[in-house]
Amino acid sequence: MMASVDRLVCNGRKLTVFLPPSYAWSKRDYPVVYVQDGGKLMESCYRYMERFFREEKVNELIVVGIHTEDRMSEYTPWPAEALVEGRPHFGGQGRSYLDEIADTVKPWIDSQYRTRPERAHTGLIGGSLGGLAALFGAYWRPEVFGKIGLLSASLWYEGVLEHIRAEEAPNSDLRLYVSVGNREGLDKPNAQRHMVTHTLAMCREWTTKGFPTGRMKLAIEDGGTHDFLFMAKHFPEALAWLYPYVDRYAAKQGGNAGGAEEWKEAEEQRVAEEQRVAEERRKVEEPQPLPSNRYSVPGTDQFEMRSGITGLLYRIFVHIPVKPAPDAGYPVLYAVDGNAYFASLAEAMRLQTRHPRGLPSGLIVGIGYPSDEPFVSDRRFYDLTIPAKQEGLRPDETVWPVNGGADAFLDFIEKELMPEIGRRYRADAGQQALFGHSLGGFFTLYTLITRTKLFQSYIAGSPSFWWKERALFDLLPMLTKRLDLGETGIRLMIGIGTEEKDSMIADAKEFYTRLEPYQNKEGTRLLYRSFEGEGHVSVLHPLISPMLRFLLAEDGAELCI
Image (cartoon, rainbow, N blue to C red):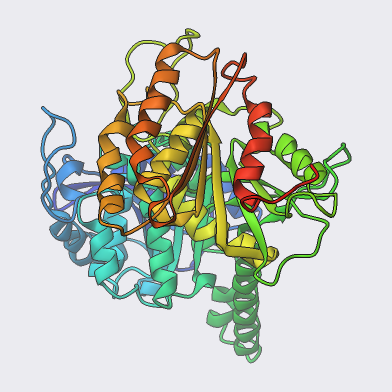
């Protein structure tokens, strides 16, 4: 028996009703899930849903697609201006829309079909703005909807995250599925670029306020963009999470002496399944070691870590010294573009600290990406830059990657990576340094200016001052003002090759010159090194030894390196 589809109208509202295969011959009552945008998510995967029913991944249920003629109005919680000039503004009629579903559409569906009308068996799912409407179903009509699916929900919408932070978490018996692609909105110049960070912030906010982790599933689609392709992919997965197959309805309604016992057993199975899923989620979110049968630098670790802030996956490389750690722990050097630079840094540290009179030992943490390539262009352009509009093609005639994720990347480093390194290794929180080269040098100086005290030392190799029309010089007064007031001191080394572009050399010298008046004030230590005969790439290796001495050597110390 195949599923069937009814197309109806309720009080002027078009509906598409999917009835499961057994509906025509059984006498059972069925859970119901209401889906925005006319059920397009459902229509894209009828056969796939039937497969889930046959394989007992999902309890059979009725799916009601709710059509709208004005999603910009009906799916938004309050009015807001359009994101793009010339487009209609957002109408903010979401409350009326949800009330219509709860007070008109749902009672009518319950009167026309064999449904289980209780909130525990009633769900609401949507994608994009439709997901935003589903979110407010949990807030505004919690007595009606007990299962909510947010598929790439438009949580960038003005005021939504503030609302989530101000309100209590939804009812703890709610069952919630959240999916987002970790590339959603990254190419947008407007509020939509916050798709991922706001989604993850919502989940953190709710769990912090006590929402049970076992009743919420967060699915991050690696590489996923804000496209129907990915929303439709997650629709059956949302059904499987919200309506997991347990034959408890028949047991409860059986009316025999063993029914109650079967119901109890089924409920125990459900709770155990929720706990299992929560444990699997915990394991996935914890950094996982990478198995490898290839050569690796001795004395190093590597693991992968998915950020709960950006949703992106990072490969972390760590050099662990042989010498015992000082009482305060090892100094730490964090290096971006870890795929390219970590091995060279680790080998230099290993060799130059081995002698009793060598450099003091330190941890090196390379922040890289899941790739064997030295540079992962699309990821580094996003992580290491502030937003800038780029016209035309790059100098190598390739398309400019998405940019502008520096602040989110810094949040990952500060709030997730640094605590993780402190948990795994004996790290001195008072001796931490940041190194970056090229765009990484831009990122290092941006961090120095905007989060001066996050690191105690900064090393910028061949910084890309050209990014966003020399924006670092526009931002520099933020730092010099604090230096003028004596609020902070800085430790900064800038290194560059003599064979690099004249403009890059001139910019590096100018930046250093503007800071030079603060030398030795409030502990400020500045060093500018020019490397004869070296270009933009070859300068890296000559830079490493002076960098390590700048970070680790005491003034006047006689070293055997």
